Image 1 (cartoon, rainbow, N blue to C red):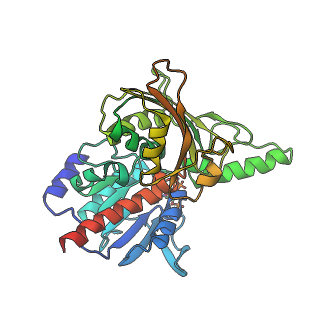
Image 2 (image 1 turned 135 degrees about the vertical axis):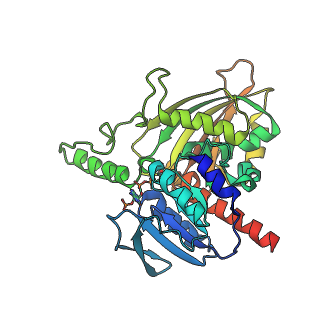
Image 3 (image 1 turned 30 degrees about the vertical axis):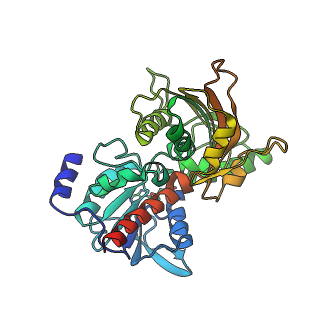
Amino acid sequence: MLTDLENLASGQSAALSTATPVVAIVGATGAVGVELLNCLSARNFPLGGLKLLASARSAGRTLTFNGTELLIEELTEDSFDGVDIALFSAGSGISKRFAPIAVKAGAVVIDNSSAFRMEASVPLVVPEVNGEVLHQHRGIVANPNCVAAIATVALAPLHRAHPIRRLNISTYQAASGAGAAAMEELRLSTAAYLAGEAFEPKVLPHPYAFNLFSHNADMDPDSGYNGEELKVIAETRRILHVPALPIGITCIRVPLLRAHAMAISIEFDQPVSPQEARSLLEAAPGLRLVDDRAANHFPMPSEASGADDVLVGRIRTDIGDPSGRTLAIFVAGDQLLKGAALNAVQIAERLLENVVRKS
Ligand SMILES: NC(=O)c1ccc[n+]([C@@H]2O[C@H](COP(=O)([O-])OP(=O)(O)OC[C@H]3O[C@@H](n4cnc5c(N)ncnc54)[C@H](OP(=O)(O)O)[C@@H]3O)[C@@H](O)[C@H]2O)c1
């Protein structure tokens, strides 16, 4: 698949050449797509044009952008003529099929799906963590898994100062990570529960209201780890440039509409004091310290929802490691923003900076 892409990219420039690009959103009606629209608007992205693409089910409907109604078009092979940047958020299958077509038509693709994240020729980018790899792209840039993106924003400043030698992560993941239909299922099942009515789950595998369950990604029966956990492990290693970093992880779906939280134990080569970690995290881009022991106020999904910054706190020595080399932190981030749409738009902004610098 990528061999085709590499052939494509070698025959033409994959670089963005305009500072006012025409942007297409593939999956504009989805949970991430809607946030892509919000981010482009909120950040005053210098658009040369905007094209909204979704399935035939949505074609002909409209979405409002900056007060203007924009028509949604059906995604087809001809959708990318004149498009400079294509933001994909319609699932892996759509990305695998249509991203090469978009690149061939001259667009740079920023892909929210997992289709290309582990391809060597596709950079996997969190701008404030490993933005330096962005220039390696040959037409496609991958946006990481939402847990990996949020976790690495908090881990990178610590890792730069003191190499991390092991991680243990437990997640508390919201419905929005499974898309707009899962959010609706949480709303409807909660209403049914409160009304004392029966509810048959259709999107998620288990009752969601007042419940939590092991992440719904496919389970690998041999290892006992699910697909979400395996993605977080592989992508965190890649983003932090530590290919063999030992990572233990348990991913759990909790009945929140939006924003993921995670408890992370971080083992270093040497002891790192909570005070130093606090200073490093406080100074880092994309993070907000929420670490008030006296008020028992730490990162919460309710405060992370709608926020660009990832919240980090509960910074303490992990007393489960007698060597003193492990810190424990708690993190919450809006996975529709930093875990998806915001990160994608930040990547697009970095691509534009390169155009402006060269001109
Ligand atoms: N949700 C998150 O937090 C998150 C985070 C990181 C990455 N991602 C990734 O982003 C992608 C989208 O996720 P989501 O949560 O936004 O899902 P979603 O709410 O289910 O939205 C899916 C989108 O894909 C479109 N689509 C489906 N089939 C299509 C087709 N045949 N042709 C064109 N468009 C089609 C849908 O259009 P219709 O409305 O017309 O069906 C809709 O716009 C997925 O790859 C997901 O893994 C999601």
